[in-house]
Amino acid sequence: MTRLPLDLPPLDAARFAAIEDRVARLLGTRQDVLVTQGEALLPLEGALRGVAGPDTTALNVITGPYGQTFGNWLRDCGATVIDLSVPFHTAVTAEQIRQAFAARPEIGLVSLVHAEAATGNTNPVAEIAEVVREHGALFHLDAVASVGAEPVLPDAWGVDLCVIGPQKALGGPAGVSAISVSERAWKRMRANPRAPRRSYLSLLDWKERWIDGGRKVLPHAPAQVEMPALEACLDWIEAEGLEAVTARHRAAAAATRAGAVALGGGLRPYVHDAAEAAPVATTLRTPAGVDASEVVRRAPAVDPAAPPAAGGGAPAQEMIRVNHYGRDASRAAVTASLVALGAALTGHGVTVDTAGALRAVEEAWAAV
Ligand SMILES: *Cc1c(COP(=O)(O)O)cnc(C)c1O
Image (tube, rainbow, N blue to C red; front, side, top):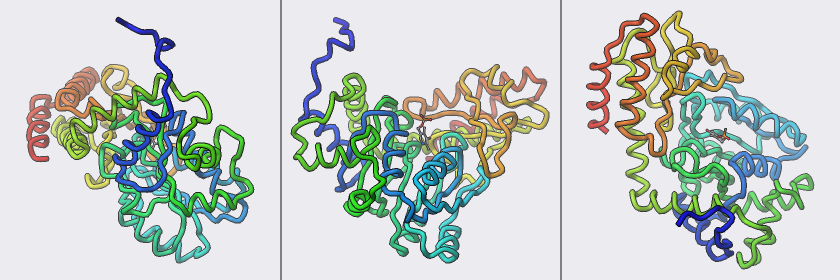
């Protein structure tokens, strides 16, 4: 029998805590994990406002549109913000982070987006984390677009605030999200008079009322529809195995990239170096004279790329994005996207090799 959402049984504290424990296992973390009752922007903003204040010097790495937003929040908190922007067709390097610390040793907080679904790049977090650890700065990581598509290891890397969302590679609901918080990040929040309290943005409220109380009583009604959806998503991920899920995303990215190159007609990967291309989504540069938004209109399987906010990215007229995450990290979805792209380009009078693209997909998929 179909049940209306409002017929759902109440979600009790024990079940809520069990979901949090499963998310913690997914991240391989022993830190506190909160499943936050809103889209991932909620813990991202809550975390940065929690730790930043006028005495903070923050290194804000911008490799896509989200970094821009985070820098604005940090400035709003009164922090001194050093923006480190790299062109969106590339990734930031550990060496650039090292140079930033050398120039400004007072940096006490680093904010980084791991993978960018919008611009299709991914950053070498393990190497960057080493530099951040050497300097003892707090490390904030947006892993929304990487979790499930590539390894996300907050404890091994020493990430103090690691935010994930189920809506990309995990194939789950967008209405809830999660964050792991280190002991020293909690300490910093407690010492920060500007940290949100008695507020929906407050992670400290949840720490004090939920975690420190032994997770017996929920502070307010949980997301009754999204939490069971997240639970179902964890069932799928655990059944398939996280490694198999990430391998599927790696294969989808490699196959999309190889397929797009084989399609030809001037279509090119937007991210130059395959090692810097995100497993979650592939961005492509359209052939000269072909408007990306027109291609997207003719190929419903392809998304318009978010207009890059900074850093010398291509205008939205030149960039398209093939999403291959969650259930779409499949050979069938990748093939369908390339066939649609091929048809759209043919419609623009561009000669493409769709059969060659499909052969390239098969080869690249088999090689992963
Ligand atoms: C998708 C995503 C988010 C979540 O934001 P939405 O735009 O609401 O989906 C946050 N950070 C990154 C890097 C993302 O890719």
